[in-house]
Length: 155
Length: 155
Length: 155
Image (cartoon, rainbow over all chains, first blue to last red; front, side, top):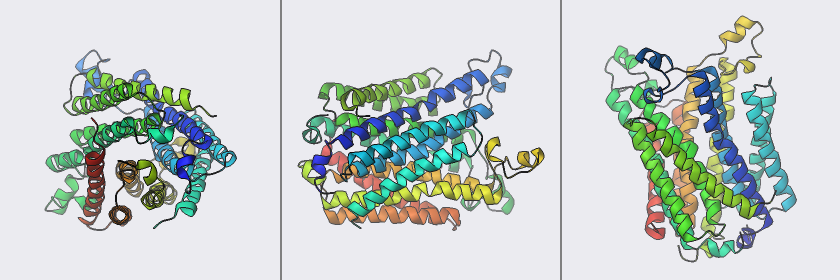
């Protein structure tokens, strides 16, 4: 992690900023997708959200869970569990001064794997497409973590 | 993202550190709030947490879900989905050298919108107060992401 | 937060990188643990994941929730709610130029408390072991947040 100060303004850091932002935006997109399913499937979690229902009875009826809404929520949850570690470990990784070629490879593979994961989850595509795209993303994060630990180790 | 090294010690970065810490603390506050509802509503998720119940039967009875507990948990989840992207994109945004005036505006509006969101969720206030406060926060994060992508783009 | 640029290459930052990576890897480990429980308990969330079931009836039967799976998921959720704030506030804390001794103490206590928390949650150990390990971790994050706010305050 020598010369980290020079590294922070490097092409690797610019690439990291770009891909991290793109994949966080993808994650944030899950909120409107969930909202879309809530409105089209009429399935809400809070009594104050049931304005669509006209009668008290109807309001109660749309206060329910729906398989499509739950699917979108599980996809969002998986994003939180995988994209946030990628961004945090990726930030530290970018400061270890890796060569641009490896860094770009990692960032592109990870971001690609998460877009595939979302499609595989929401479609849904038959397994093991979702499992594989998830594992590829995990693998990239582990590889970056390995470099951080071998470069920066200070226990 | 030129001269990022000088930027990291700038007033923008200090302001980011301050507002990011405040809004993360707000998010962490949801844990004690959930715990408060669990104890007052006597609704626990784990058998080992039911020490309040005296008999085995009573212990089983308080192993349940409660609307107020679930509401606090959904509010916490929404914080995770929105505040963590704000902090991560805000960090990259702070390194792009924005002017202090815009940065402070973004940080203040976001943090304000999340406090409003929490009040609107827990009270609960009638919609669309919660929806609007959520959208304002999303808008700020998108605006900062736009600047990161236009300043740092390296695909 | 003076001389932050020199600080980023310091031993404190190396130590932060090491402990943050370790505790994020610990959090990521919850995914395979959840998958392990899903397979051994035969409890899946998505219809496309029920390939283990041979008949349509059997497939439907393993589309269910299981106490051990839910326990692992709650542990993972608690990690998201606590480890991500630690890493983000810890990053800002590392840039405030704390002395190495205090920083190492905070990082070690936090990481230790989260490993204990996971063991206490999954075993499960009798309370208040889980509650105490959770509180110790929260305390460390609050202490670091206090230093960030007192050093960098710019509202």
